[in-house]
Image 1 (cartoon, rainbow, N blue to C red):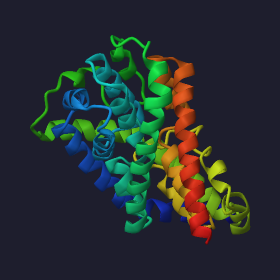
Image 2 (image 1 turned 90 degrees about the vertical axis):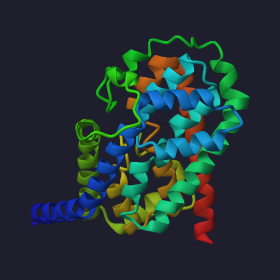
Image 3 (image 1 turned 180 degrees about the vertical axis):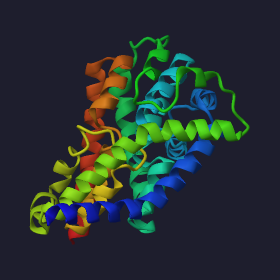
Image 4 (image 1 turned 45 degrees about the vertical axis):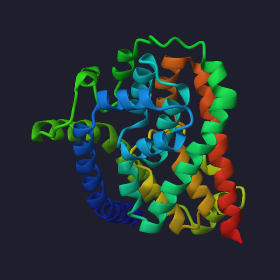
Length: 303
């Protein structure tokens, strides 16, 4: 029976991803406790536009969801940070620490690939920010009411955490962070597992190869995450199944870069900060760069 097959496939995927999810959750909770919001605020203030790769590495090291990144970017901007570091910090969500740990489920090589293309993505984005985006954001007020950005369910922290000075780790603090991260990540991880199960059981390999196996598949893969909020590597179960079914490497990279960042929840938070037209413009540039990188990798992989 197909129902039994679905249950067995779902159970197998849960067993495969669960160790990586637990490790990612625990490490992320410790990092967030030691290096909280106030520390991020100060670091982003000190960065200059030319320090793009530094802010990109910061984005990778901090295991924060995109919504939390937007909130922290707004706090740093209110304190005087420049636009390029704060926006590249947001874009670093494509390869946050927890996402990298989860990606190692596919392979260590794929995890390294995710890190490399995410840094390339952020560096390319910084060039667009300086030339196109920053002039249009110059009129955005620096004294935004950023506390309201923390008030939705998309962020794993609250406005109270802004005043946490950090620098020490307590078991209670780690547990609080772990619960906050789990609250945000678990629903989307289970949705990814459910979609992955359906694709594995119902969708044929020929169908996946036809839709996501061609040279231009990155264009379509970059749109998959828009309705969802795949944070912290939650898209990995779905990505793993699609790869096994014949998904193009470029399409996989395009999905990894766009799924955490280009979606309706992030648009909601970013739009409340800079305005929805500017938020759409920023996300459109991110989508375009991710697609170009995906198309290039897809072409190289096909050769």
